[in-house]
Image (cartoon, rainbow, N blue to C red; front, top):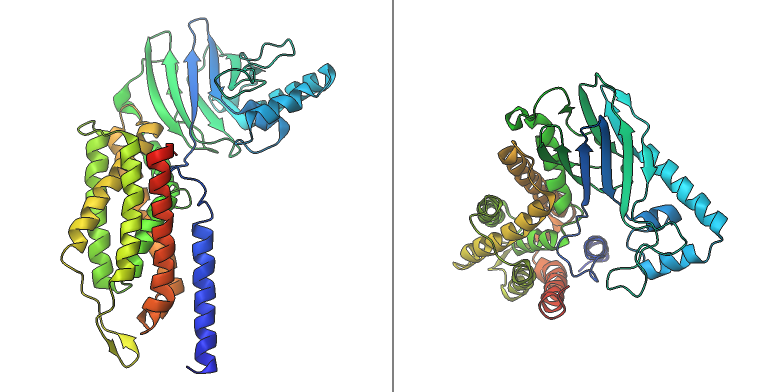
Length: 403
């Protein structure tokens, strides 16, 4: 090989290595789905007031650290403060939450009172380190209370992008009715009519569709590392359009089927064996990519590789498993009352867009290089082995350690 050719392959391999490093940067995390969802409950009270309880990692938010910081360390940080310092931190947290959580009535923003009902207020933690639960000093519940104007017609809730998406439950004590709604971070909810009984059929489906499309995309890029690796495994088998399209179509049809059936409660399986099998599917695709060689080379370029007869049925079966994984996430998000089908379709479209984004990036970075006669040895084999090792590691961790 010429020096120029070697330099070209060095650049290709460096780029491929960088891509794989970015994608498997989350290797220590064995969980398949990292989409964090907060819970919220908004109560329209019969006395003319409104109360919003929101689940937030208050300790981490107050101290300005990552939400996954160890609880005992956060509790120790609060206990190391003087009473005045703690009071100032809590007051500052209340002011911060009043800015990042919005209660909007008829276009005007309310100024709610913010409190932390789980915090005892006597200098002791809400959940001590000796408890079975993760220790916390302030608790996990922030409460926002306000009085509604007598002639208020509609109320909306909004959050800052600092907070994760919120699965918001509305409860109207005046009519003993309610609804559920997924509230993406940074967005306002659909309006809730205060002067009329709730009509589930009147839900604004346009307001539901967009957020669920975005969440479907986010579940693939960047949070669905297991699905990213599986789709990359399909690409590495062959970057040519026909075999790639056949595999992606089989995968899409399968996971769309099980996602829909699971969302309608037609099928249901425990999440742990599903996640183990998803990880095993990633390992299998990577291993098979290594074992299957290209058929021939013509003039330094590869001839199209035929799909072995078992490949599409296996990809379809693996797609059924991945669909159950998607359904687990959708179950966590919940489906909004009156717009269940809209949310399901939107989420599935988002998933497909995320997969296409992964394939587009892979094709842009590696498409031409994959046509070379030495692509299998220099690109397919190392990346597929990396994918297989990741899947195998996850399968073992999920099966024996519950990760």
